[in-house]
Amino acid sequence: MELNEWQQTWSGGLDRILCMQGGDDDGSYARNSDAPASAISLSKPLLIAAIQSMRLFHGEASLRIADLGCATGFNTLSTIDLVIDTLRGRYNKDCAFEPEFEAFFSDLPSNDFNSLFRSLPPFIDNKKKRYYAAGVPGSFYHRLFPKGKLHVAVSLSALHWLSRVWPIPEVVLDKRSLAWNKGRAWIDGAKKEVVEAYAKQSDEDLRAFLQCRREEIVEGGTLFILMAGRQGLEQPENQLGDPDSRAKHPFTSSMDQAWEDLLNEGLIDEETRDTFNIPAYMRSIEEVEKAFHQCGGFEIQRLEYQRIVEHSKEKQEEWIRDPVSYGRAKANLVRATLRPIVEAHLGPKLSEELFKRFEKRASADIEMLHKTCFYGVIVVCAIRK
Ligand SMILES: C[S@@+](CC[C@H](N)C(=O)[O-])C[C@H]1O[C@@H](n2cnc3c(N)ncnc32)[C@H](O)[C@@H]1O
Image (cartoon, rainbow, N blue to C red; front, side, top):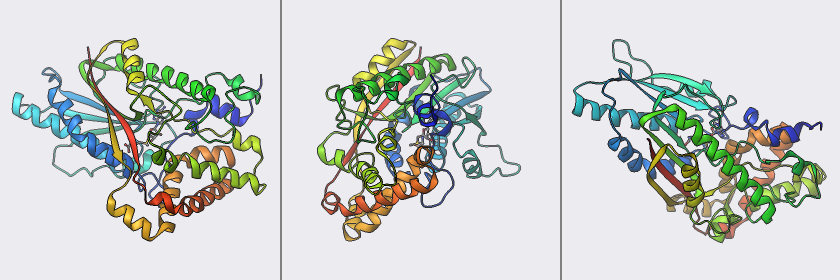
């Protein structure tokens, strides 16, 4: 069966287009990564503890660290720094010897590696290099490194992105299928069949990720993951916890309203709206644990759920005073995370129209601005056995 362009995109070609918006303008990921940044700072002590407790590799002249789903900007650079500084401290203290470090920044080929490389710390003459950096393009759902290559692999705020949306392309082709996600851009509050299709894909993906890392990480090496997630196994259609957090999330109400606006204005047809699906799934702790057990080869040292407040109190007060700037900030966040896949679906002009509708909808919802919302993350630290 011949698949048209959007069918190919959602059923397998996602790694060619999914990425965060590159560059460093207002709509770039580098300028809109505060939420992942707060998740990272919250998990920092856990990452330090994981590195502090891993075994040292006495015979190795160099240690290799990978950030999988690195994107661009401060988050990945500070994470690599943190891992290297912690390891360096331990080697100096325990071995009176300092290995060299290699840092692999890995993401999908569509990632803006140029921006990332431009932001690397400069190499100062006559000083020992902090680390040797390299970019590794590819999907973390496939092998990225040779066997036993990595000593530390981290993946932060990335694994909730799926490799594709639909496990069976035929489901997409059949509008009468129960898994046809009508009127929604995502799965929060969607029909059971739609959520099940996502859950199945998420399960396959996580197992594929772990099987690849099982090959690539050396015995005694560390895998540290932080991903958007849910606390309980029940109600996977409730991806975001409490009702306020659900309503305020950029993938839910305002997003669906923005698509509806384009439809009502005659700019797109229903099929165009209904075939756009955000390829993200928030796993529960149980789903994550099950995938680790099925894969084998890792010993879980820590597996926990944490709730993160969406914004600081000051930011919230600032936005209550100026809802338009709230709408703008949210639209920029959506541009930063979704522009490449929206553009692949709608083209650049209509995409911008969608983001403008989103901005208007988000700033009109003044009541929501007074609510404090949360999002959940799952943190896992595991040792390769
Ligand atoms: C929200 S960003 C997080 C970036 C960074 N780790 C941080 O914490 O700021 C998610 C990143 O995961 C990447 N990503 C999504 N799916 C991926 C895949 N299958 N393989 C590699 N990277 C992927 C995206 O391209 C994006 O750069």
